[in-house]
Image 1 (cartoon, helix red, strand yellow):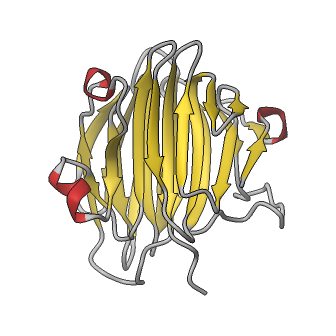
Image 2 (tube, one colour):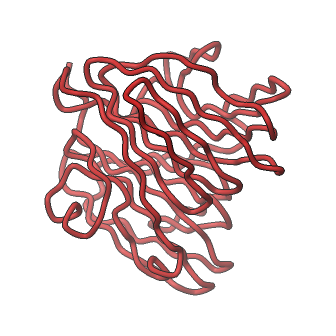
Length: 238
């Protein structure tokens, strides 16, 4: 089963310094029909103006993945970590027992990124942060794990998260296709970051969402070329 989440239906808030779209309930946007998709809790589509950002604030018991599309995100946290994550690259913060952090756009252009939250397998654990480069040429026509809790994905260089879940990315040239095996009882959420994708016959426009369940195999193609991200997650434990 695939449900299209049309771009026009995604909650849009313009705070001046931050232009944001929430695929799921977040902050001031609350919709009981869009709270999570399996263990996926948040998919925010954020554009931050130069010289601005998210000041110091705290999280706990959440796996937070940031995928940068344009510009760069400069990170600092209460653990002493500092880093700059550029377009095409990924950072992961496992909040665990609690961490405070800040995220800034210190570039001369707006920074555009996806922020994805996944519930962890278990609560607690030491908080940590990591980042890595993922050149788009390395995922041309191929799904590559960017963040994962699976041993095989970690061996391929994925950043570690504390859940039986994965964020995968691919860039497709016009006419290219990739296949992802989801598995029984699991959930997937797919967003074309750029371009239009066709998912098991359903056309998904740029920055729209495709909520997928009960489909063992996902066939993804693009007539125009596309950059896609998929969250592959288990059911949510209550």
